[in-house]
Image 1: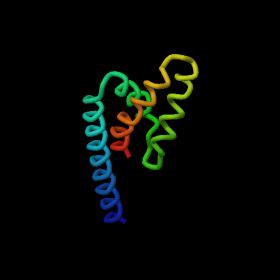
Image 2: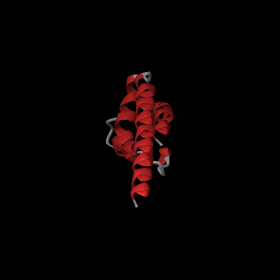
Image 3: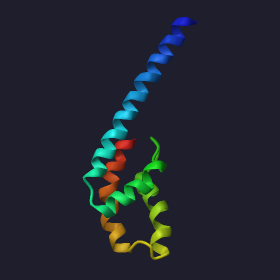
Image 4: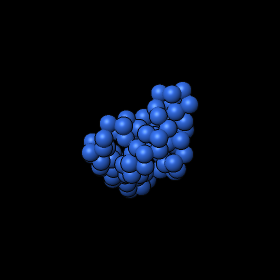
Length: 91
């Protein structure tokens, strides 16, 4: 019983450290983006999970903003792929 608990804790710590590295890499990637793509990254990042489809997350976050006129459609189409590359690092 004790061995399995220790093994589980080691796996949990290793997984957490890998996730922390991915977040740091994604944030470093986003820091290199222009202001529009960085804003999209910040908006979408909390929704990205390992099983997420990045395009679907971006559409769900950006469509209401485009429809309300808060973001220009052409700008969203140009900037979203750049932000998507950084968002992939969160998976």
